[in-house]
Length: 90
Image 1 (tube, rainbow, N blue to C red):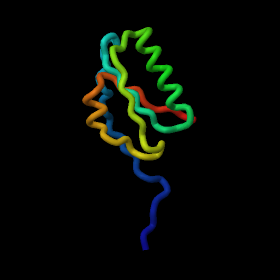
Image 2 (image 1 turned 90 degrees about the horizontal axis):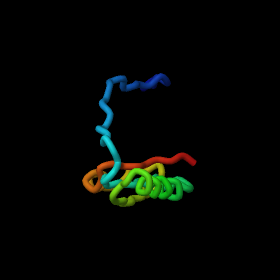
Image 3 (image 1 turned 90 degrees about the vertical axis):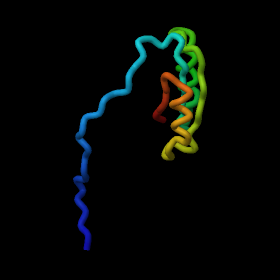
Image 4 (image 1 turned 180 degrees about the horizontal axis):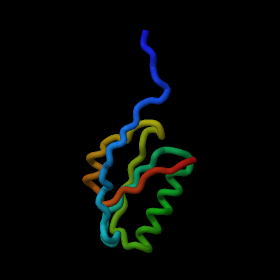
């Protein structure tokens, strides 16, 4: 018989944050839609604002197959962008 603890295990190791650019002007922006309701609307508006207010140079968009599914082709997203905008709650 296997007894499982409801406490679980937590990884408490520290991780470094991704490097941030000093400014967004001229950056290539990737938008990863997580497929939640209205995420596409919110992310599209944020991307437009980043172009008009921060000088983002270009936008490429990807969409996950479902909110609970992993994004496909992460390497392509990372290779196509300097900054990635993702995530949205219902």
